[in-house]
Image (cartoon, rainbow, N blue to C red; front, side, top):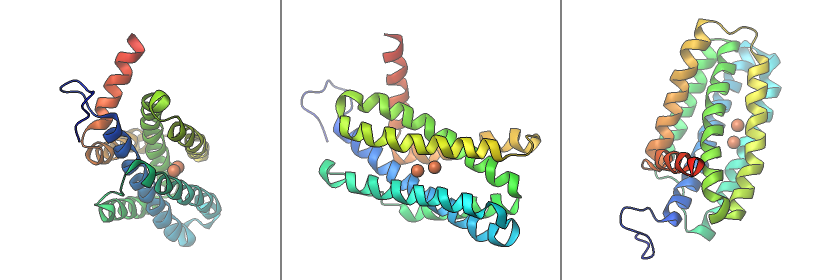
Length: 198
Ligand SMILES: [Fe+2]
Ligand SMILES: [Fe+2]
């Protein structure tokens, strides 16, 4: 959609707001699947961490619901390839659980820290444009940070696997977000960098 008040080459902020909601909702859905698959595996392999994973999955379910509720008022719709997020999340959850307890936490750290960075960009973008959505994302970001801290604190060691996997899972998460926002995620980042310099 073209915003008549925008300059040529500029994006319509409403479109970006809809993309933010779409990708956040889909991302929460993916996170529910990651934790769901990990819980399934952990029940057999490492039952002691199941309660922590279940607690985080509860948060993601709530986030998913809140983003879904924020959609109609902004004429946003859920991602058309939710099945892709679902499958991606489940596969990542199963593979990391097979890699061991530490790998589960490495996965959580990678995903949550990537999400945190994107939420930072979104918050800067939304501050003036949609204060209500800004407040919602800020409150969700606090819980995502708690997930990140939990993942960091739960790792018993940080060896080669941490060094190798963190950037790979982080890059995969970045790619999913970039594809789902049609590249707007990198545009927002560039805009924030410019705003920071100005
Ligand atoms: Fe979440
Ligand atoms: Fe989270």
